[in-house]
Image (cartoon, rainbow, N blue to C red; front, side, top):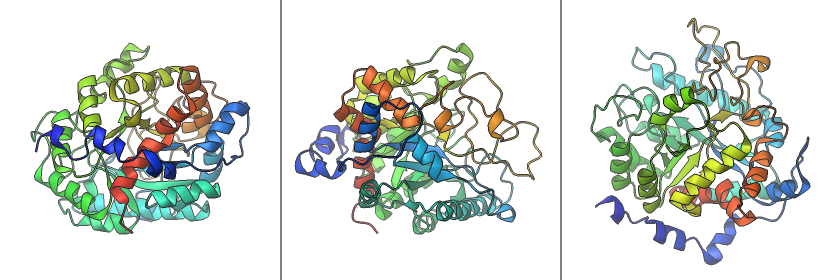
Length: 406
């Protein structure tokens, strides 16, 4: 079956979710507590619609000996941001994984640490759309558990079931480094596998069977296109941008361009019913970020774009046993938004601009989602369109992936 024969075509997928069924994404207005300089009009929109960041790193220990790690005030960062939910993610491949079991043990330790973070902040994981709607009505932030890269599988597709049982509902197939048994070609690495591998195929089928949303961020075009032929549900590419939107920094533009998607590839994803998250990288202001979203919408259509910042709500964490010279905190993305060096100590005072969600831009005073909604309004989007970008588009594919599963 060709990509354009995918049963979740753009037209079919969108049409099945219009009319009465679309009402499940709308909730009665709920006024979040907010602080600072948020405009009342913006705050009212934020309170009414869902705000979901589909790729947000929460740094936690990945070594069992360091658990539970520092106490994180996740709830306060949520309230400041205006977001309802994040896809709470981490990656295990920032350190070498020389031994069988290293990746799996780091994965389990990360989930154990996140269990503690959620418990101490009285936050629950959302396992399906009903859970997201319940959280919205109650005015309580929530998370969708994710992981970036399937290194923990170590060749065993049946471990997807273990991840599912631990509450994982969004699975990123790839990250920067190849897994011990690779799943496909990473877009920043030399082509080795011709796209999706057999393990990658098996994992997508497991996700479809269990009810997990597949995230194809970091995948090459050939890997994405092969995955679209296998998947029976719409897929997510949680964090990227158009390769025409390179920002003002030539150094960053050169480094980031391999991580961006072409207009042609974005259209293929949209035609298969998928959604792409636009990250905050390569945008020095909220208005530039909104313009990057506009560029993606102009290519894919309003029903296929979402927010995926690749930032962190909470502070960096670095293992005390990490002896490396360069700064690369546990679980943190290592692609700085500017030419400034990465934060080495993890202390708030030395964090780079763009590292934290509520500090995505220099001199940012409003919480993240308030700043984004304000910028989207100024870019010409109306409230209904902002609702789609801010959360409803993600909700549609999350529901398609998880509906009918526990």
